[in-house]
Image 1 (cartoon, helix red, strand yellow):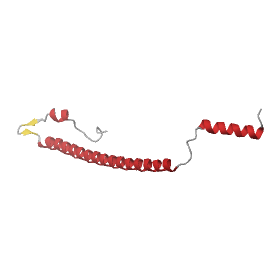
Image 2 (spheres, rainbow, N blue to C red; image 1 turned 30 degrees about the horizontal axis):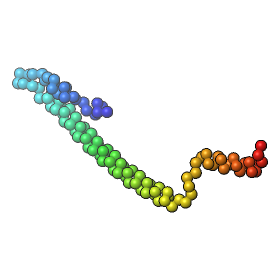
Image 3 (cartoon, helix red, strand yellow; image 1 turned 60 degrees about the horizontal axis):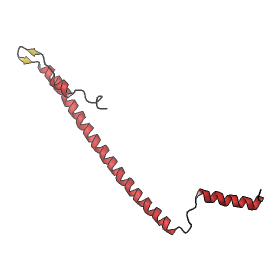
Length: 108
């Protein structure tokens, strides 16, 4: 993910060797290298800001979902308390349906 945005690695910077002229390092070469480093630092800072924003968004969504879960649990508890009908299982429904069929069609 970061390889396409960050050009240099720490090893690249450490192992960089500049050509030496009679007066020392070539200023254009050093400036060009420093420009790449500056660009990478700006990209790195942008990545950090993006990551922090993503983290904030995820935490906000997590809080919202937890509140929604609490609200739904409270509604479910209220529905359970107000429900007068006992819990009906699939087996109970099938048994009742079978009894109704026997009554309607006769026992065979």
